[in-house]
Image 1: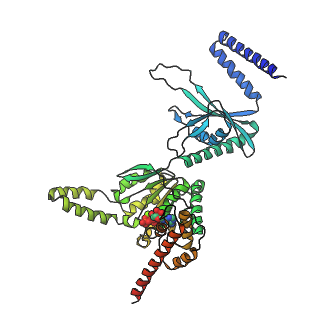
Image 2: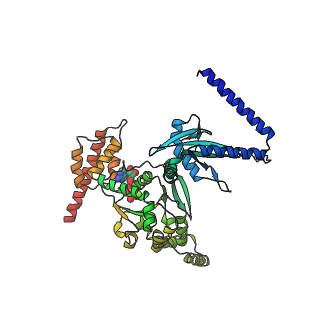
Image 3: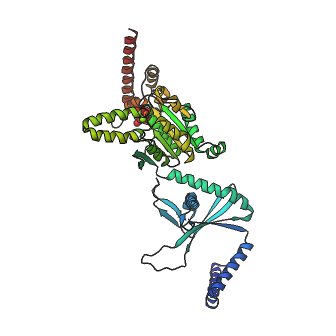
Amino acid sequence: MRIGEIFAQLGSILAAFMFMTAILEQYFPHHLRTSLEKHSQKLLSFLSPYVQITFNEFTGERLIRSQAYSAIQTYLGSNSSAQARRLKADVVKNSSQAVSLSMDDNEEVADEFSGVKVWWASGKNISKTQTFSFHPVNDEKRFYNLRFHKKHRKFITETYINHVLKEGKSIEVRNRQRKLYTNSGSSWSHVPFEHPATFQTLAMEPEKKREIVDDLLAFSKAKDFYARIGRAWKRGYLLYGPPGTGKSTMIAAMANLLGYDLYDLELTAVKDNTELKKLLIGTSGKAIIVIEDIDCSADLTGQRAKRREKKELVEDDDPLRRMAREETESKTSKITLSGLLNFIDGLWSACGAERIIVFTTNYVENLDPALIRRGRMDKHIELSYCSFESFKVLAKNYLDLEWHHLFPRIESLLGGVKITPADVAENLMPKTVPGNAEICLESLILALEEAGAKAGLKNVAQVG
Ligand SMILES: Nc1ncnc2c1ncn2[C@@H]1O[C@H](COP(=O)(O)OP(=O)(O)OP(=O)(O)O)[C@@H](O)[C@H]1O
Ligand SMILES: [Mg+2]
């Protein structure tokens, strides 16, 4: 058939359709028309081998945006931008992406999963109820239609839809702008979390690094496991080691690896256990809660009492006022170790999921064994002085060097000197523009020799 004939036939079909619609509109009352439409649709779906499932954008009477709809939208994102002819671009709040693309209304894209082909179509209903308002009311209700062959019904409803929702949600998590929370009083305030640290750039022995990464990834995927064994989905890490060995850097790398938010809990700013409770309940899932320098924080009571005494002496010598203040202050219970442990163990279990708590300290030996026993702090990680393996990571990061003729000298010096990765990093910072690797490595060798000489002097003094 020639093109012209095809168009002519299409035209006559369209004309017949319009004629029928006009007749229907004119001679059939509204309710008859609706029932006719319904029956013809039923007939069509009876004859069709395809099944269709609709996912509406808004659910329930309070018109809450459906999580399934937004997960599907995200899931279809890459498919849509590759297949659909008309796309919608949106600036998404709380997302690290500049714009997100989704298919426009009345577009269709195909998807395939485990060899089964399905089609997703987007559409919108415009509500027919017209209410008078000074402000135009947007009554569009969007939806996605999932169409598939009826022989795959079981697979689609039991496996495919779950896969789409899970994948969509995890893409949402990966794309969202993560936050760094800090506490003031009993509330959190936040800024965007933009620390660039990754495990790749963290200087550490490769096997140890691998083990930590595996542990974190296993945790993040273990929702069902934790549910099955009846434990709260949380994990505690204790990072210990001298200043400048990468504890804080590792926490940022953890957050970047898992896509979690960071809550930096400053215990010295928390008034009492009630405030602590509020703060911890106020944290969301997919979060790392960090308490840095726990050895200093555990001694809170003493520090605060001392600080208060000093302040009172300076600020207030009216005995009546001082007595009144002392009375109110003695009423407020302070943070105690048991308050903290309660959360880590018990209360927390009841009020949330997928949380990692990280404690850091420079002096692990000062910590109360009750605080760090396994189950509370599941994994103890020592960050230590710079080894040659760690140095190689830093050399790659800072100088883009895999090997250099000065490396053997540095290796032998590192064997006998304690230097932190922070100090090594400082020496590897470019000193000229453009950077010169040799100058940096020589500056590091000098620093190592000086540190070696100092340590030698100390040893001699000790022996003497
Ligand atoms: N293991 C490491 N890998 C990569 N960089 C590191 C490492 N350790 C330290 N650094 C560098 O040194 C700086 C200080 O490190 P970081 O703040 O992580 O140390 P820290 O162990 O938390 O110290 P502190 O005990 O004083 O809090 C970081 O900005 C980072 O650039
Ligand atoms: Mg730190």
